Image (cartoon, rainbow, N blue to C red; front, top):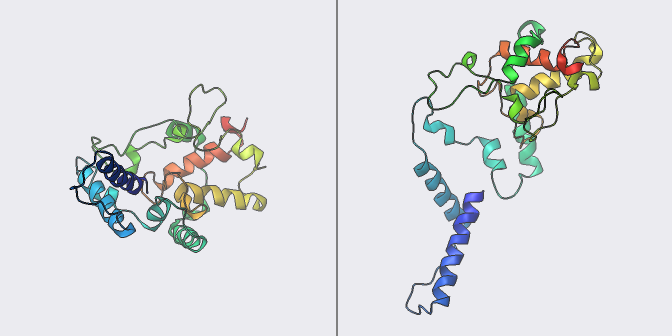
Amino acid sequence: MKTKTILLNAVVAAAGAALLAGCASAPSASIPTAAELDAQAAAMHKASFRAQGIAKLDRIQQDLGQAACSSEKPPSEDVAKRVEAEALATIKWPTGGQYLGDWRIGETLAQDGRGMAWNNSSTDPKDNGGQCYNCHEIDKKEISYGNIGPSLWNYGKIRGVKDVTDPAAAPIVQYTWGKLWNSKAYSACSNMPRMGHMKLLNEEQIRHIMALLLDPKSPVNQ
């Protein structure tokens, strides 16, 4: 991870400075091992965070996917497949097979940046927004939006979804739900928040965002 690189650079820089200064009596600086760098990085992370409000220290505990994807090298193919398989197994599919809610509520959620800050009073998903605009273009009328993720404009239209109950639409409908629930199921190192898995949004809220993306009547698909 980047912290290990910073630590290693600091050690090397200190050793070089000592040599340039002619400090013959200074102790020699040894290059730390990978395990030592891991331990130092973990200690730095732990020391840099504190529990406050609704933000607890469990937020810095990494699961397999987070640990594998925050290292300097990308995970091996075997590890990536394991991350994706474990993530896929966590997806909770919609009750009664009902994938879509109300796109109007979904649009409000997508533009809502509330939730999960330390000074919020609640961790209940119903008090959170989807924050989709942080990473995606949603509407061509927008003048400011993130570009970490792809544009969502015409998301359903481009993919030919005219009726979510049509069996032909099932693959993209299910993929979209799964991506919202736990994005690592389809890309081990996805930067997208795992909305359902991490309880950032509840099932009803995800239905509404699904409608924003896939309902032919949604402004996204006009």
